[in-house]
Length: 258
Image 1 (cartoon, rainbow, N blue to C red):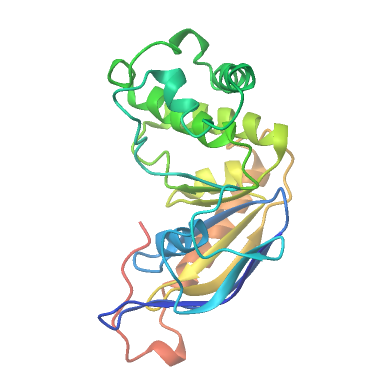
Image 2: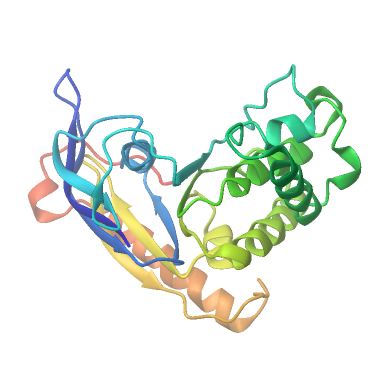
């Protein structure tokens, strides 16, 4: 269980990035975070990853407080961030230096097979397309068997066809070990394709505004009536989140969510 308890973040210049975030995510659930610009989605992910410190509240994984990078919490960034001096297999196995060589090689080979890159194991990152590089970063995150996986808009720079292909690879890897997943996205279709639950955030300061459950069987057809209905519910929740609440009417208007 990932438990985010009354979490707030205020920066040194007084900017309130997050306020009173309460979110419990059971093991194995995929939660998409979506909301207007400035609502603190990436800040929340950085706090859960232990890359930044909260001003108030706590983050716990199975009862253990997270306040620094944790071996059971993986992170996939918007950019692949591969090491150019290592080949594909070396990048995927980079965090497994303490694992016996035979086991490390077997885990790397399996992860590369699951993302369709077995034949590219000895290629250099510069020889790969953008989509292939992001597949390597996803394999690298899963090969460590994280209990929590955080994804910060990992597919936003890719074309629609490549993005949908990577959704399939991501879900295939997730199905093997069922880590808890938090994914930040601006793409409603992506949220519908991947998530069990969509959490809509309201900006300035960032806080949780609404939740849309997606009890849909996988794989999901984006053209299916159930997927289109889910997308409409999310869009309606987003629209509400960008309207000033009574307590926010003197605040600066929110930016568009996209």
